[in-house]
Length: 156
Image 1: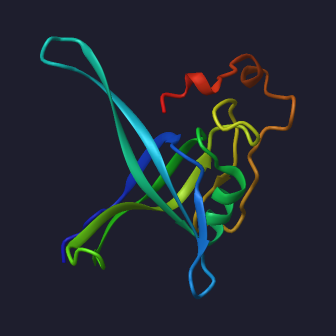
Image 2: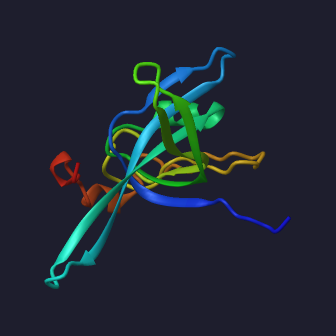
Image 3: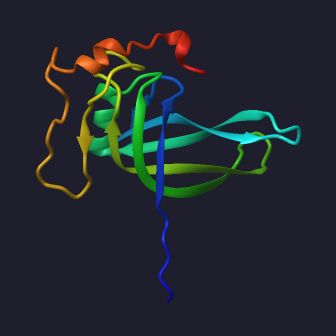
């Protein structure tokens, strides 16, 4: 069989607070949306910004990290893979589809207590046995103190 690749890399902002739940077997699952934006010229030559929304799913330890550190407006770097699920709608009987990004790695680019500002963050490499908290010590990040962003600066 020929080699194939299913890898997604996204850098964007969380659209609303994540939904956290557990499966029947006790596996923690976090669902959230991530917005990415792209600029391109329209037919008249004007720049238009287009936002794409991605459905994200994180399991086990990554779901715990999302639960503890991610909220609406958080800036994230995410690596994962695309997966499309299908099911029959119980009400209409129609086949439904949902395309999701299964999170394999996540880096929080926002500060711990502020969803939309700061830098640093927690980084967890999947498959790595030495997880290190890479957040900056409090008060040591002068740039994040001077680059405050309010909720009005977030486009959603």
